[in-house]
Length: 185
Image (cartoon, rainbow, N blue to C red; front, side):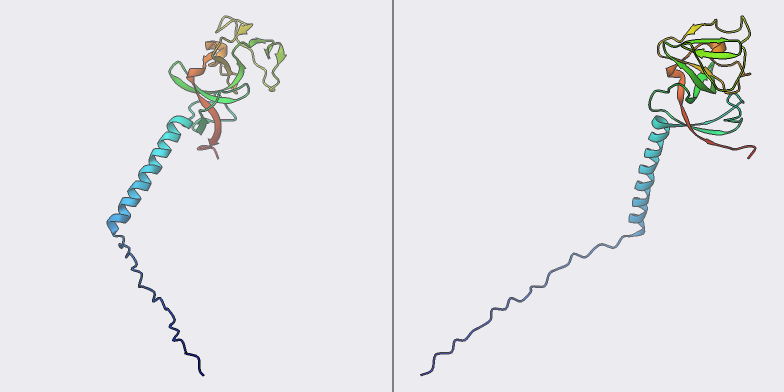
């Protein structure tokens, strides 16, 4: 006796052809639109950086000579409060100037005998200078709130806080972070 032979049919599932979505070829117009969008976004980011985060200035004069010379390109960082010892760009009498912070709000500055003292401590920067009597402010000088006392690195130039008094923090353009020499390289 023979066993019935089962007809085993193998269920074969034929792969149904998958329709691939055809990508639309990019035209020159599509590439141009992408480029314009990328350039516009980049321009907006750069404008925001330049107006809110950094500042770019050309130094006029030698108030911070020898660190910053006349004609140098100076880049500043605008975020954060400047502290003692920082070189800054500030506005005074309608002009943009460079200088170094010697004292902050509440500090007592005294200049006598060619020395600068802040809160009774001598600032040792190797520069000896005098402020002519009767010209500018009287010492000891207490820096008002929301202000800083700025001295030029070129101490013979008296167009700084020795003559004009403390500079309001709103007049500070930013802390100098980068200098590009444009002359005398």
